[in-house]
Image (cartoon, rainbow, N blue to C red):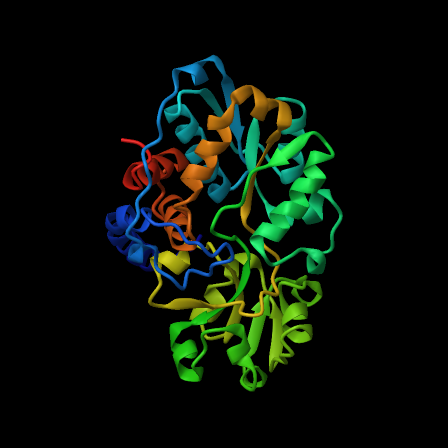
Amino acid sequence: MRTDQTRVRVLLAALAALALTLGIAACGGDSDSSSTGSESSEESSSSGSAIQSNPENGKVSLTIGSKNFPEQEILGEIYAQALTAAGYKVKSALNLGSETVALKAVKTGQISGYPEYASTALTSFFGLEPEEVPSDATEAWEKANAEFEKEDLEAFEPTPFASANAVGTTKETAEKYDLKTVSDLEGVSEKLSLYGSPECPQRIDCKLGLEELYGLKFKSFTPVDIALRYTVLEKGQADLSILFTTDPQLSAEKDKFVILEDDKEVFPAGNVIFVTKKAVAEEAGPDYEKTILQVQEGLDLKVVQELDARVELEKETPKQAAKAYLESAGYVE
């Protein structure tokens, strides 16, 4: 991700400390489906109850898929390992490709199910414009599930965390202008430069939404390659940069970067929904959905940032990170 070896060593040192705290963080859920991580999961006193193995589930074989990037592979492994603990015969088919490929794999029976983002489902599969996607996680899931049901599919309820665009800045800039929410930029944004993807000016979850729905104007906007979204902040080229809520840097370098809360809930809901065939769910029985929803309870934003950091920066495998999460949260021994 970066070529500077010194920065990599700093990141890895930070992640070593994070690895020690993941067990605490993974124990708690976040009841706010559109959370931006403002409430630390360490504050939760509840831990996940252990998954119970049901011998009847051994008659059912499942194949759990994922799309082709680390966060998806981690989620696929979490679901696969959890369902194995519930007694199912489970195989993984991770890194399938795009959402189109993954959905086709569900429809053809190549896989039993996979994690999808509600906003992606609504825009890529069902033709909604980004501004038509609800920001509320439950509403977005209900809308997507209604469409999936027309195709004899179903989507289970969403994760607590949302993987979505966010306005990010350095902690120094946030403290200088007392920025905690996007609305706090009112009266300040005219002094600040914004960097984002080339399509940002046309996206509701980017410059377009910030201007039209928050009423903000910026000193300047500069398109930038997505891989440089943190570099421009570090080098002082940008005051604000469009980040992703689950970026590993937000965990590994939490003393350096912050994201501003989308307090008007403008950005579309990017919570994960598990997509499967109705026939598969019926054959698998009640433990199928129950297990998936159970292990999602601990997946708040802070935990997912840490899991992504373990894989993308610390170079653990998705299987290792998923196992660490399930064990530390108490879902498996």
